[in-house]
Image (cartoon, rainbow, N blue to C red; front, top):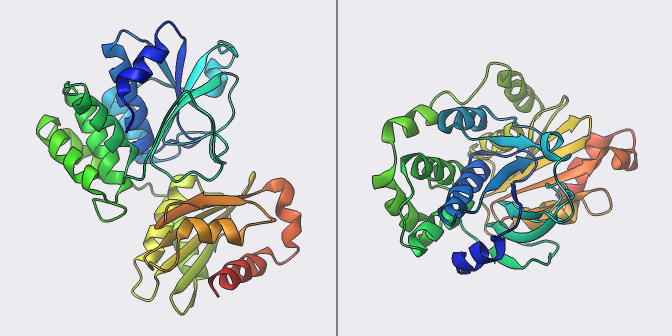
Amino acid sequence: MNDFEQLAELCRGKHIYIQTHNFPDPDAIASAYGLQRLLALYEIPSVLCYDGKIDKLSASKMLDAFRIQMFAYEEVCSDMSEKDWIICVDAQKHGGNITDFVGEEMACIDHHPTSVPGEYLYRDIRLTGACSTMIAQYFRQIGRKPDRDVATALLYGLKMDTMQFTRGVTELDIEMFAFLFPLCDQEMLTRLERNNMEFHDLKAYGEAIKRIEVYHKFGITDIPFSCPDALIAILSDFILALQEVEVAVVFSYREDGIKFSVRSEDPSIHAGHLVHQALQGYGEGGGHAEMAGGMIRKENMHLLGKYSRDVIRELFLKEMG
């Protein structure tokens, strides 16, 4: 772990933007929000930003609940210059899920594995269950307690990214849960965790069920229409819940290409390596051992030919042996 005060010292006198990945989920939002409040303790203002869109109900509820101001790129691009500094949170440049903004990416705080190394003045990349855990640890490191809103947001991000402490949990995640829990608004946390599905999501569930194929322990399905990143990830968790499935792949056909979400409960199958290798020559992918994502961009979809669904299935089956 790096010393947070090193980052604060680097940021003094600079115009700071805190950028998440393109479709920020609760963990990304909580981490960016927590970091913004940390920097404010050192009288360093910052702006939260992202590209893409807020496409998950849990994320939009969170923004409303804590009155978080988070700006889409088109809202800030006219004000951003090459001299401005960007802190990447819950994402890394060259990671495939974060747009290259005009400013200079000077720092990175992330809990995902590094696929393409980037250069930063400040780098804190560790494998934890959630990026929120790392931000919470910064508070403890400088001897400050986050206020109730920040503690609740960080705890919510931590619980969501670890699926209620059932996925990718580390000892540090447990320690930070113990640190945050007495400080949080438990009633607010309960409200955030309820009713996070919208009615139109059921159509995607229906297609995923109708089109699923299972080979030994491998389950794969596709959604023939556009789904947001967050919903594709939820569906991959849903498929993984089947007793017969230990590795799940879900992909959605969208205007920008084909988006993938991969999950693995098999210790011999690394989800990040699987999607990276399977999509080589067609797209890009990577992530954790248990959860990963990938993308075949629109301009490369023709490489799959007429029967793209069959080709994708064979790419993953071949990679799994």
